Structure formats: C-alpha cells, structure tokens
Image (cartoon, rainbow, N blue to C red):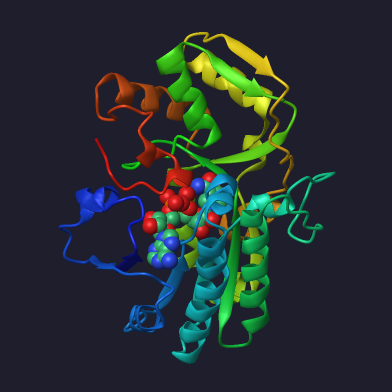
Length: 300
Ligand SMILES: NC(=O)c1ccc[n+]([C@@H]2O[C@H](COP(=O)([O-])OP(=O)(O)OC[C@H]3O[C@@H](n4cnc5c(N)ncnc54)[C@H](O)[C@@H]3O)[C@@H](O)[C@H]2O)c1
C-alpha cells in the first residue's frame, strides 16, 4: 500500500504505522503532475482522500482548494484511467447537499453553500463523466466524521463538543435544529475497505451516501448525547452564528449494497476523546495543528 500526502498537518499521524513494511509513504504534492502520475505505479486501486478539507480551510485558501480538490483530482483520475486502474474511490462529502429539504438520497438536488462543497461537486462531475465499462469510479459522500485520531480534528462537531466539555465544562450549540449525519472515523475506514473489496460491478460508476440512518442527528441531539456521555455537561445555546448547512440524508443504499452498519457511537467517541485529553495523549487541544484552516504542521 502506498500513501501519498503533502503532509500539510505534519507526518505524525502515520508514526504508529510507518514501520510497517507493507506500507510505502511518499511525501509529495498531488498538484505536481510527475508526482501524480508516478504515485500510481503498480497500483490496483486508488482511494482519493487528499484535499483541502472543510469550509473554513477552503475559504482561507481558495486557489489551493481549486488546484487540489478539482484540478489535481481531475489529473489523478485521468492518469488512473490511462494506466488502466479501474477502481477509483473518491472521498466526497454530504456537504454537497448544503441546505436540503426532505430526506436526501443520491439522486437528490445538490445545493452547496461553500467553496469546499462546490469544489467537491465539480470533481464528482469530472470523475463521473470519465466512467465507462473499464474505468469505474465510486463516489462516497461521507457524513461528518468524529472520533479519536493521531492528529485530532477539533473543528468537527462531536470532537469540538467533547473538547469544550473537557476544557470549559460546557457545550455551546449554534442553532441546534440543523440535521447533520455523523460517522465515526473507524466506520469510515471500514467503508473504504468494503468498497475496495466489493465486486466492482456493484460499486463502480456509483454514488453512495456514507453514514447510517441511526446517526442522522440534529445538532441538539448530538449535544445531548455528548453531554450525557460525559456526565451531564451543561448545554448553552447561541443563535447568532449559525452554520447554514442542514441536510438529512438517506443511507439505505450503502446499507443494502455494502452491508454497512456503524459500530462507532457519539457516546464512545466523546468518552475516548476526553480520556485522551485527561491522560495527556492529546496535549493542548487549542493548538493550531488541530484546526484545518490554520494550515499549521507544528505540534507543541
Ligand atoms: N472529515 C470529515 O468529516 C469528512 C467528511 C466528508 C468528506 N471528507 C473527505 O475525506 C477526505 C479526507 O478528509 P480528512 O478529514 O481526513 O481531512 P484532512 O485535512 O485531515 O486530510 C487531508 C489530507 O490531504 C493532504 N493534502 C492536501 N492537499 C494535498 C496535495 N495537494 N497533495 C497531497 N496531499 C494533500 C493533507 O496533507 C492532509 O493530510 C477529504 O477528501 C474530505 O473532503 C471528510
């Protein structure tokens, strides 16, 4: 297995597994066409995760967002197709639904409210148009992730609420009625593996919403679950600065075709994250490396 990453947020996330002799780690920028093409040598399947991720990060770096999320993505997909790599899995996002109405399935209208979401839609369209009998890409529209990881993202809702509970003894909710489907980071990994192992006839040239109907939550419910798991942390409401995204998504297809059922829960993630903060595994959760929009690789 080969990982290509420019390590915007440092190399530490891969420390634990870097000694594995079945893993090759390449530091490089996907926007460099030579890096892009040579990264595919000897490869059977591509999982494209690299991107400028999240609304604030894309807003801070619009040019880099277009270069990586759209142009480099197009280049990688074209190179994969030229090299006869049929299986190309693209990490998109449920943010493409933006502000949705009813229960949204894979054919519902897209309504992006950020450059990030628009960049993901543009690349979805480019990749899907390349699909044919041989090159059979899969678009995975992931829900919002949560859970412990070697480089925490404290800019994701469950992780933020858990961290604020630990640091400030309270959870701040902005709005609260917005729907936001959630998915644990371990479950996300499980879906990528399922997708790599699935019969290409079932997953190629397909779009899947990735998450579960059980974890289609409104933000208020997420706060309630985190609060309860951590022993009744007070919840404060603020309706002034609202995140406009609001989408309730159907996950019937990923359950049917890939047999996906979530193993993770918001409650387990909250207690694990707070445990890691308490035992010092995560040092100073306010440092910039934990927030994508700072583009900081330095860890204290
Ligand atoms: N985290 C979520 O909640 C979520 C939800 C839906 C979809 N996704 C998608 O999943 C993927 C991974 O997200 P994440 O949360 O792990 O984000 P992340 O920011 O932690 O990881 C993105 C990685 O891409 C790398 N990268 C960025 N530009 C690059 C370039 N030009 N060349 C090589 N590497 C580059 C960065 O160094 C970083 O390691 C993204 O495509 C994202 O859109 C994430």
